Image (cartoon, rainbow, N blue to C red; front, side, top):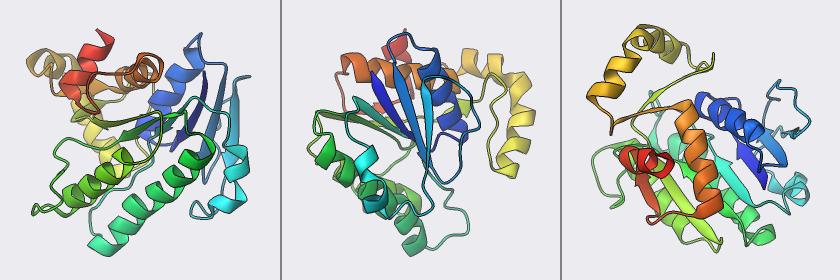
Length: 221
C-alpha cells in the first residue's frame, strides 16, 4: 500500500507513521505537513507545505495512494467557534475534497474524538464542529471513509505530544497506563494500536464507518 499521512508530527500521527514504516505491506509513505517529520526511512517522503489551504500547490503530488490517514488537529481551548471551525472543518475538507478528486479509490481515515456530536446541535462547540466535519467527510466519494473516535490515548515508544500541557499530563499518567488499560479496556488506546487499526481498515475495511475505542480494539484483536 501507498499511504498519505496528514499531521505526522503530532502525537497520534507519530504513532501512525511508526506503524506504517514498520508494516511489510506498506511500500511508501508521504507525510504532509507544515514541518518535516525528521524521520529517516527509505519508505518515507516528507511533503512540506507552508499553506495547507493552498491545495493547488501540492495536489499534483497526492495521486496514486491507497489510503490517507488524517491525524491533523488542534485543541479547541481558548478558541472561538469560527476559528476552530476554520482549522478543523475548513482545512480538513479542503484536503479531503482534493484527495477525492485525484484518488477516488482511496480509503480515508479521520481521527475525530470520543464525544463527537453527529447531530451538530449539542452544547459542546468542538463536538458540534467535529460532528459537522464527520458528516461531510462521510459524504465524499472515496472508496471508503472511516471516523476514528478514540478516548484516552497513551503514547508509546518515546512519542510525545507537541502540546506542553499534554506532555505534563502524560508524564503523570504514564505509570498508571497498565492499570488504566486493565480497568478501562474499552476506553483506552495506545498510539501503536491506533496505527495498527488504521492499517487494518485500509487493508480489510470495517463493519462500521464510525468507530469508537472499543471498536478499534476489536479490529486489531
